[in-house]
Image (cartoon, rainbow, N blue to C red):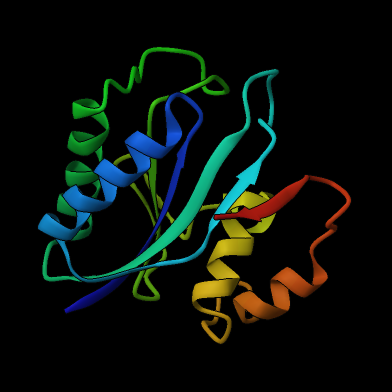
Length: 159
């Protein structure tokens, strides 16, 4: 079994899409756990705030099969992959980590660079896996969050 971490985000009917995506991920993967929910401002464009969280799960699927499963869930939620990179979306599911594998092939990038640059990824990841070492940085997620410039992006926990 492989341990995976997935970033989940939405700013179009976010509560509905996030809850539905969690149900679908529980059908795809095992031992699904989630961080708290966080709200953050849109990054890279003007738009409504996002709801974000990170999911940890177990899977026997290959890295490619995991990414395909995430893309299928996004598609069922009306995700338009042809739109601009920085835009509002019903659902954004990104594979952040797959064990400690480093992969830059076939359009798959793990660990995702966003871990180091976006509070909406790092904060919930540090919550759910504070002692997990980043595969290339060799620091824990908790350490990376402690060092993160928290004035750069606004993020807060929500109920």
